[in-house]
Length: 95
Image 1 (tube, rainbow, N blue to C red):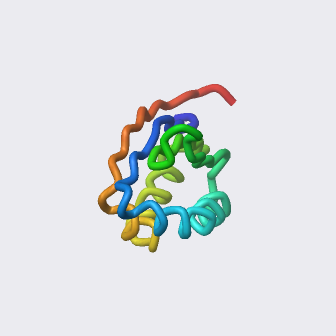
Image 2: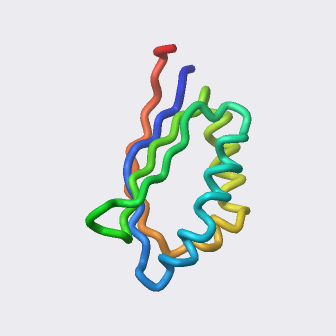
């Protein structure tokens, strides 16, 4: 099994935007330090400040699942509980 790739966006309720932005750098730092994380980007949209583009790549399914579990237990998971997530998750055997 190869890399797991997630692409999409999150839509943050306006009431939660400041809390999400305040925790985002920490969430990115913790995720990039995870074993198996190859790429992790969350970028705020220039035209819609409540929309963030998300790109993730993990070396394998197990690394991706560990990330998902950690995220759900983290401050980020609590702060983004009301966030709408629109993702496409694929798997690639390319190096």
